[in-house]
Image 1: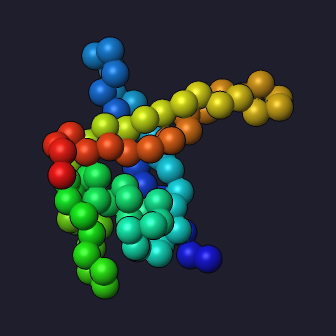
Image 2 (image 1 turned 90 degrees about the horizontal axis):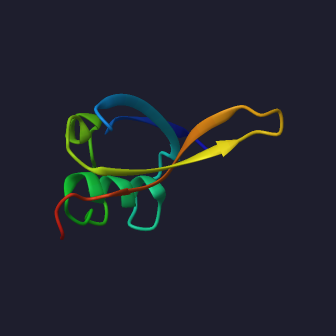
Image 3 (image 1 turned 90 degrees about the vertical axis):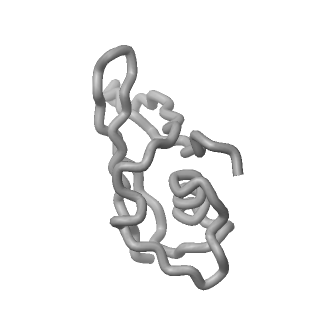
Length: 88
């Protein structure tokens, strides 16, 4: 199905890195995009709620990244999860 690419600026050890992740465009409490949007906004997404990309821009969140290695030795960042900086 249709996908959306999310870009995150990650501050780590005084360096700024950009990491990206793909998610289905389907927005619900059970999808990756829905869970991540909730974490970025710091609240649950309501059933049927529409979220604009601009609603998610420049919001602080915690990005969990794991390094993965391909069979030919290329190492890349894999966004595993997004967590809210504030409990909700």
